Amino acid sequence: MITALAGAPVPGPPAEPLDVTAESVPDTSATLAAEIARRAAQLLVDEHEADTVRQVRLDRLKTEFDLDQQERAELLREMNVLRDMAIEQQKKDDELLKKWIALI
View 1 (cartoon, one colour):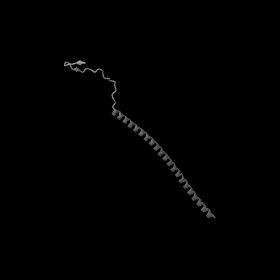
View 2 (cartoon, rainbow, N blue to C red):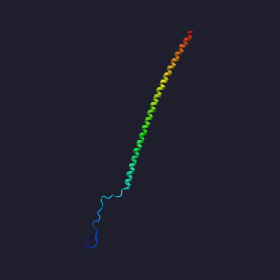
View 3 (cartoon, rainbow, N blue to C red):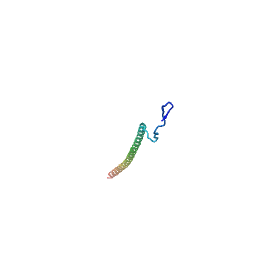
View 4 (tube, helix red, strand yellow):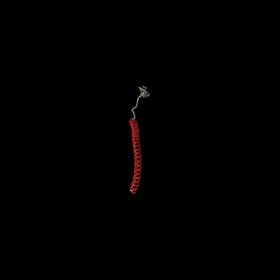
């Protein structure tokens, strides 16, 4: 140590230099906030993926329902046409029968 003129010791450089590579205590609040933000972002991504899957399934169900309804409507139209044709045929048969009865 170096002594001053009055005889009191003067502080000099430390005996051991500071280790600049030493790790400091991690900032737990910053680390915790970063982890919470990462988890929140992951939850949002997972939720968006689940929503997308649900929407695709719903769209597929809607499409299947629409196709089934279109097929049903077409079948009903065909049934109506066939019924109308049968009624017309019955009317013609009745007229023909009346004519045969009139001939007798």
